[in-house]
Amino acid sequence: MQILPSISKKCIVIYNFTGLPFGSAAAMIVSGSLIQAFGWPSVFWIVGLLASLWLCLWMNFVYSSPSTHTNMSAEEFKYIESSLGDSSDSKKLSDVKFLRMRTNIF
Image (tube, rainbow, N blue to C red; front, side, top):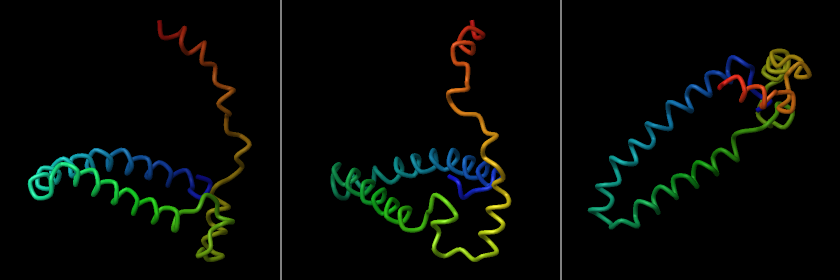
């Protein structure tokens, strides 16, 4: 995402990788009650509906760049643009020496 400063990206990754197991554990805990009350297909329907709801919220409230964000103040826009810096310094995937990495493992 181009809209997050690097320190925020680190936090988002941490929240994502810690939140995923908690969501899976919560689904496992709730699924037993759902199966008893409504049958086994209800687990798939409810989890699918929750995922669809999350997707709708994500598509409406998350933007890929500051320039496309509609509810951002000028001050926020200026802060984000200044904290992003120049992205031309970042390495491209084609610059990574995969063969060399593989040979260094063994």
